[in-house]
Image (cartoon, rainbow, N blue to C red; front, side, top):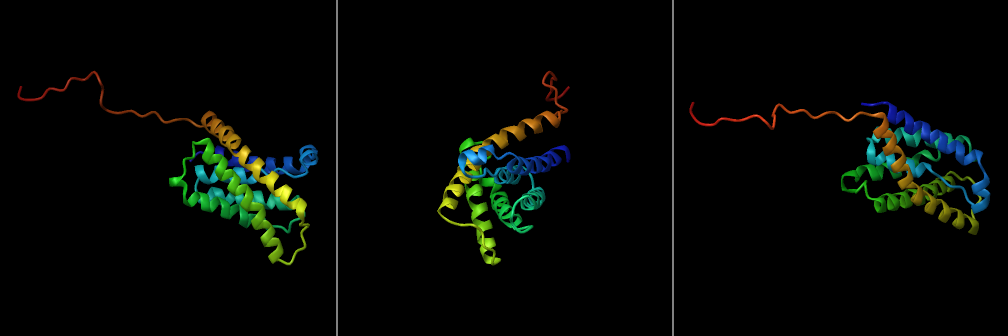
Length: 183
């Protein structure tokens, strides 16, 4: 197995979380934060096994929680559930279709913050929740859905650039003559 691509995906999760917290211009413009981790979880769950999806959910969730006001580890379960549900139906999903990527990105980007809010409420936390949260949820869902095909094209290009395709050789030559019958 080529370990370069999984390392790049984990590095991308770290960079996505860093960019979300370090640059506030887009957040101030839209009034909501764009979350790229669900899009990365969708890509990972469609292209890798459950172990890699779990790694992205655990490390991405921990990095996200360490730079936010969330209790440490609360984002892991929603990211993992989104990735696990997509990974379990991977054989039925048309991963190369842009429409399917957008729909899966919308679903994962909508479910992840909703499940995180549910977990926070069940832990007797007092998150800031009001009508403005609905706008933030809509922006996070739409941006995650629209940026999922971007993740697919970026990481597919990286995978093709950094890995080799095996050469398929057969013992059959097309110019070989096969004699049949008696000599």
